[in-house]
Image 1 (cartoon, rainbow, N blue to C red):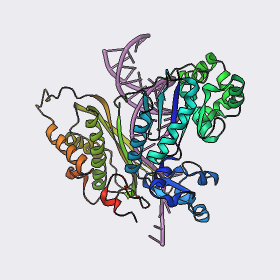
Image 2: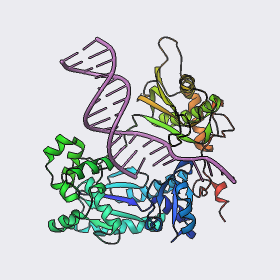
Image 3: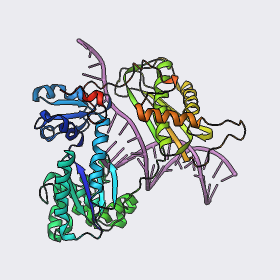
Image 4: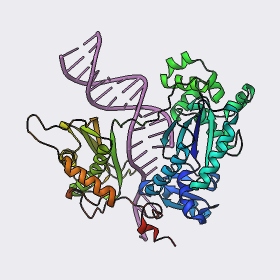
Length: 421
DNA sequence: CTATAACTCTCAA
DNA sequence: CTAACGTTGAGAGTTATAG
């Protein structure tokens, strides 16, 4: 088996640069929702030592000093750029797994092994030319190794010009390379595992690869055992070409300011629910249960803290926003306690099943508003999200998240394109 | 007791 | 001018509960 992992470089920043070349060569960050934390950094920012996830307000002084430009995340733009990139990449193999917004695996089974690195170069060059985005390519025998090869390509530890093929490296070459990489770079090894493994004297990828799987299985988990096997070139993780339906659907957000009243929480929860239900119908599912939760700001030690969720089993599985909204607001009313500064709320759709056979309720005879939902979804798809909505979502929405530094939706909205100078 | 549900922890992008 | 720290999803393992 041979597989490639193609990953965009500083993906969000690169998307912004495609449409605003003035950002080229300058230190740029993209912020998370609500302009909260750094979620993408240009090479210049990484060189300044700015860590992923740094809260923006903590960075302000340093940003002024070094002229760091900060942008709110523009998901409409990134999603559109992503789908362009994925369709170019998809033309290079019959097997593609889209793993996230900025990366995908390509299956290279049956391709001539000696030519894969050159093939990787062509991919890189074409994505750059056709979509404008820089990517790196890692090629190896398993997905875990391909991820690692991609890391090597990005850091210039092996391979050349953004492409690294482990398949063409000798055993001693691999040993020397893996001995220089920390275990934290391995797919599936996060902060906690790095800590625990380090305590057992395992710090390099080579050590992890050569560790005893039986012991690891016993003292850690199957997951780590599989990771180690993958590092040895034994495939344990399949390429998943068709994305399976979600088992749960979540919509949650922090507010742009504190919210105190049940009225405003109602609007927010109704809005989040509408979005979640849209996703639910899009994948053709029904929800058998729903959870609503609210919380105050855990980072503010001056405020009294409150955090609670309530899971509500539904008498009958449904995808009807009207029914779901009623249930969600009922749950919220149970949860709500006055006197707190709420910072975030969320809705979760659970116990999902196939919507194959629409049916009325045996006891109440209730029928879902399927036609109404279809109309709403069509209108909103054609004219933009939120064109048609239930009154419960409110109009003012003064609690909506901050996005003070957002670039225009260059590729998906004519009106915003007109803003471009 | 077992089977399952519910919840917690970890990881990823 | 101020205050200000993300979202979504999966899977494994553990604990609680029902029968």
